[in-house]
Each structure stands twice: as C-alpha cells, then as structure tokens.
Image (tube, rainbow, N blue to C red):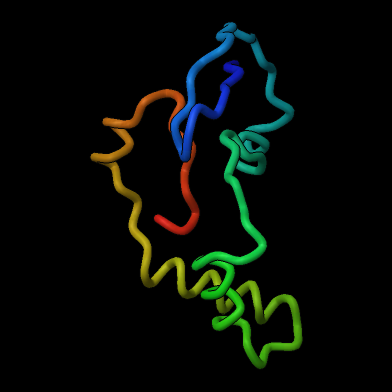
Length: 96
C-alpha cells in the first residue's frame, strides 16, 4: 500500500509505503475492483468520445456495448510500457 502526494501534473511522490497482507473474497474479486486511482474530469477527451459513441442509444446495455466495442477494436494493452512504469504511475484516461 502506498500513500502518494501529487507534486505537479501527473507526478507523485511516495509519502508512506507499507506491505499489507490481503485475503481475497473469490478468484474473480481481484478483477472487479480498481487497483489504481483514475482521475476523471467532467469534460475531457474520453468523456466527449463516450458521449459521441452512445449518442442515440436509449438503453444502458446498448451504451455499454457501444463503448465496449470501441475499446475492443481500438485499444491494445501495452505490455512494454507496463514493464517500464514506476510504481507511483497513475493512468491518464485521455492519454489511453
């Protein structure tokens, strides 16, 4: 566990670091919870894109499907970047 302080922009410094033993509820629970903070803004590129993708959709399931389809067809996991990231990295949703 780490407590981070935002120093500027997307830069952080570690204020406190402690090892914590965790027992998981189920095999799937690890994948159902956020492991890092993602800072959302009410308006940004990702929000504007999402609004465009769901335009004309009335049902939530159709909105989710439209965003899911976009992600599956346009975003790839960057394994090389993952190996180079600092432990205090916080993703920027608009850069994704």
